[in-house]
Length: 407
Ligand SMILES: C[S@@+](CC[C@H](N)C(=O)[O-])C[C@H]1O[C@@H](n2cnc3c(N)ncnc32)[C@H](O)[C@@H]1O
Image (tube, rainbow, N blue to C red; front, top):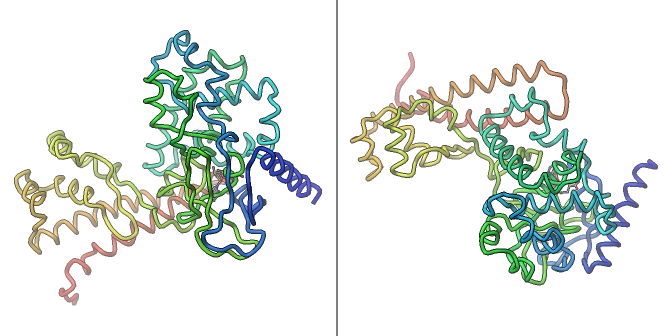
């Protein structure tokens, strides 16, 4: 109980500090939410269209804040790193790491409400033991690999700037930036001082840390987050009852992406889908891959609970049709009933093989000690199984040949 009071006090103090920085909040407060860390909750009944929060530009930590101190222009050359490799993500992580090591007071209250390194060790796959990483779904494994490479590149760029022995702190702050930044397109004069090359790369990751707004948890639908040169505004998307959690949406992300980038999966996610590349790519020979690549159809084969995406359909047909027949399909999408029945049968086999893999993974996971990591993995594999089952049923013999009577 005493701990909860401490937790409340911490968030009250941070909110007062944020207010002193010009952050306006209306009808909402931060609160502990089981399974979601801290989130934002309605103080009272809220109406659609109400402004819930405003964060002025001066309260943000941006590439404009960081380089003034990091003097990126002067530092990039001695770092010996090509300018194109300098990311805003890495710069912000280096900035936070060094400021924290120097005991920056401004960050003190804000940091006190961030998740701990131990929280990340449980939730973020990049911090998991290899035993758990090896049990991720294939699409999540691909995402994790890309993230690990991104991290490594940033670490190699910035390590000479980081106080010795602070790699763990850099990694922690890199994850803070990964999970708590928002996209802001209005960089100010600080960014203009950066070389053109760096600014070009900044276009790809215009990340900013936004006090208070970084308390909002994600849902597939949520309040509107808008930004202007003046700052960020959060506008209520619908009616909320007092005590109800209020969300924003971080984007139209599937659960493999949410898991790797943010450390959670949603129970109901209208944007959820699963990638079939690990099943389809091995069925393609060199020539098939070349044909697909020439037509911009190589890789990124998804299905969701409703449909098998068009590029997946295209790749599947290339895996067993002669190229001339496949090109006709690309041009007209025509196919006979017999051809369609055959496609369905091949799809059924592919999805059934994947479903067998899912069941094997679930059997392994179900024998493991129920930790947070293991439970998250079980959820993700079960969600994958559900999406596959819909299409296994739709492409089953009975569905493909509804007029056929079994005797
Ligand atoms: C921008 S922060 C939101 C505030 C955060 N919950 C906290 O405790 O400070 C993003 C992180 O919140 C958590 N999160 C956001 N939405 C979530 C959700 N719907 N379910 C579970 N965790 C969520 C994840 O750990 C994510 O990395």
